[in-house]
Image (cartoon, rainbow, N blue to C red):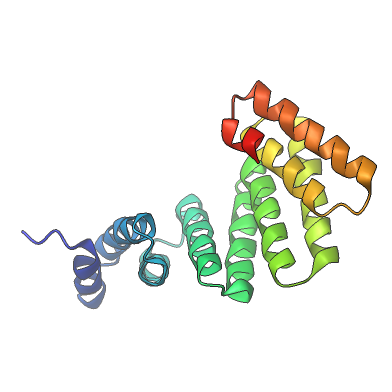
Length: 179
């Protein structure tokens, strides 16, 4: 009757029930993240990664992405970069180009936070190059905006900002327009 999924995930892990531990840890991690309890969310997503079936590559990729997000909130940038890179490789192997592109954009932000500007710009460029042929999407709009932020060339910055606005209108994404 206990509804404390973090506690249940812990006990399932300790009892050697990996499927239950993974399922419960994901739920506990999502709850913690929604409440802004980023340390707890990171603990739970790590528990889920330890317990999830190694063959569930999509689930593993989503968990690496979620853990990367939580580690970024904790200013643990090197660990966030490592988790994001793992997610990107899994998405790439699964042929999920949109997720790869969005992951590269997010990795660009992490590199920027680590004062690695050239690397950040390279990831931003790769994200746009991967997403552009796939057509308008929220991920492409955010990638344009991200690339514009790192541009030292005013013409490129303006072109990317205009492209981001165009995509925001096409996919009806007001949050991107406001940025």
